[in-house]
Amino acid sequence: MSLDFGFSRWANNTSVTNIIEDTKKIAEKYLKLEKSKSSEDRVLARKTWQELSSKYWDILNVIVDAQTELMPDEMIFDDEEQLFINYGYFCDSVTPLKKKSPDMLKKRAIPDIFQYQMFSDYIAECWAMIRGNNPPKAACGYSLEEKEKLLIDKLQIEMEETLKEMKRLIRFGSLKSSEVDDLAADLVKYLMPAMKVNMRIKEYREAPDAVKQQMNQERFRYTEAERVMEIQLSIVQKNEEEPVGIPEIDEFLYSHERIKILARKIIYVNQEPLKLQRQIERVSKTCSQFSDQMMRKELKNMIAKKREYMVVPAKLARTDTSPLASGSDMEPLTMDVVSERICEYSTLDMDMFKVPRIRMYGIPKVVLIPGQGWGSYDWSDNSIIIPAIPVNDVNKTITYALASFRWDSDEDRSIKNGYENNIKENKGKSIIELSNSFYKDYFIYLTKEKKGYRVLPRETGKTFAIIFAPRKEEA
Image 1 (tube, rainbow, N blue to C red):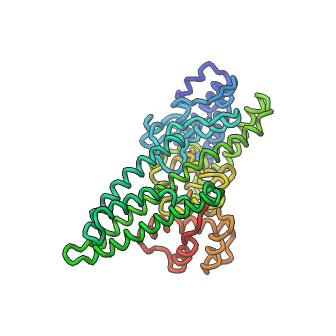
Image 2 (image 1 turned 90 degrees about the horizontal axis):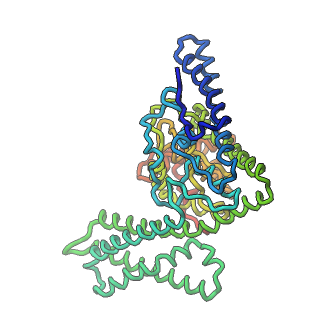
């Protein structure tokens, strides 16, 4: 049997080829044992799989060493390396991936509030910061500047459509045509100032009194425009000749809320460059006096630290903690799917972006990691980690990650205390039992309750309504 693990780029690098050959021998042994019907061989196969899994980290470290030997400003991984690093893939016979395709690496995240990375992008970002450089743009995502422009373009398109629908709905209201145009103009002009005041962003909090007063006046103009709009909708709903149905009005109001959510996302994204720069300065300052060897060691330390958190998703799902692909029936996640689901579910709980942790460290980055399980949050570097292979349910993998962020960022214990004290069955649970129970309920809350289905027990549902009641935010 001759296995081909790829890594052709390093065919002349002895360190890489040696570790690859050692790993192939372990893989060949595993394949023989794995096919055996002997119980002893099956036990030995499991131990051999664990040995093979640990080789993932040995190979990764050797590749990182080879990449950084000449101290480049930027690390670049080819497709073979990305399949290995991000999906734990060696070859089809050892680490099969359902519907594996080179296109997996080319799927792009939708432009949204989060920054998305593969694990290989994360490693490249760590190296860039150690070197004091701006992180390279992940191939699967957008730069913050690109993202802000795309979101602004989207806002303009959706706003035009929404205002056009508003004018159609209230054409038989009490306003003249010119007054309707003025109303639409106010909803456009004062949208962003109103959202900035509502979010209490730094620009507003630290503004001189005169500027702050001006922003408050603009927020009032927007609130007043919304009040007039709602009055007109109420009037046309009762119009005797051509009444507007409640479903139509509800659909319009939903679109109007989407506009405000999109505006808030643009403001959040606009705040991110400063927070990213602080992070770069913090890392580069620590490493500025390091020798080349110490910088390379620091990168390995950062990877090792991430490794500790990368087993959490598998432990949550009570499954294999190996970073290697293991022939799951679930299709591996690609960044377009991850970003679409995270956008969908985070939009249902926008208050998660109001927590003090985001004001301090910024929006968590989303990192797709090798292995399987349900998503989690790594508070050590403010990142949401999504395993490449979901267990049973993609939605569960995504919502567990958001639940973990919600739980770990609850520094004032408004969620923890309410969830423990207001639900009888939660009293006396350990912190681990409590968090696991919360993840499960939050999954149901986002996928069912927020969409109108009453699934949670009454006591739990009431508690969630209290702890997730709208709150003030600061960005």
